[in-house]
Image (cartoon, rainbow, N blue to C red):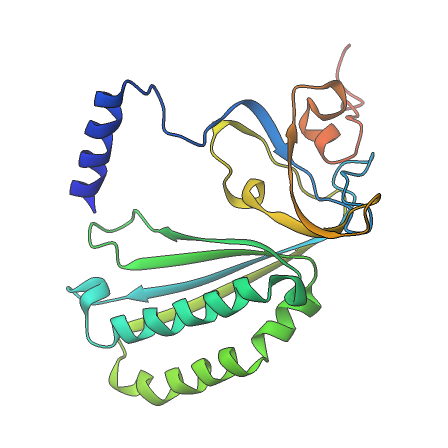
Amino acid sequence: MALLSVVSTLFELRSGKSYPKGVVPGQVTAQMVDPTAGKIPAIPASQSLVVFHLGIRFNHTLGVLSPGAPAVIQHFDAMNRDLRNRADEYGLYHFSTWTAAESNRNNTLLLMYYFRNVEGLNRFAHDTLHWNTWKWFNTIKEDHKHIGIFHETFVTGKQQYETIYENMPPVLLGAASVASTDEETKEKRWVNTLVNADVKPLRTQFRRMGRFYQPPTDRVV
């Protein structure tokens, strides 16, 4: 993995590129699209959001090559392919995979998902593929106690979140897309969440949350 990173960097330097392809210059923020119109609402952070973390840790010297690890990863990959293909059905906006830096074995994988609501997440959790994967894991876990799994669910209401990205490729919620109906053509399309943050209505944290900052009452202005 480290060697691949070095080789990629050398190729980019030889090509004369100052930064990799796909970087969005300047400041942008993720704002959820109105699915009925395919547009960003006038009020920032006007829709609720569910963030779901799903993780796997291989507590073994061989890490991702430890007994059972390749099979677990294969099952998770199959679930994610199904989830991506049925994103609109589940209300999925985006997911990405991350590797923890806490160990040089790269033995902790974290998948981060963004859903429209907890009902969509729950539908996915009880669908056939996920349910069968969970049953399969329960049959192997006694013989593979070095494999740990975890999840966290965060349900946030409207105007309870905000994002900012500067000189970054689309990442996390900024890489999300919303299944929407074009207001004019009535055709279905996927609309990315990124918008320019260098405008007055989105220039501060509170404004990106659809709020107005109120200074502390004891502060001398």
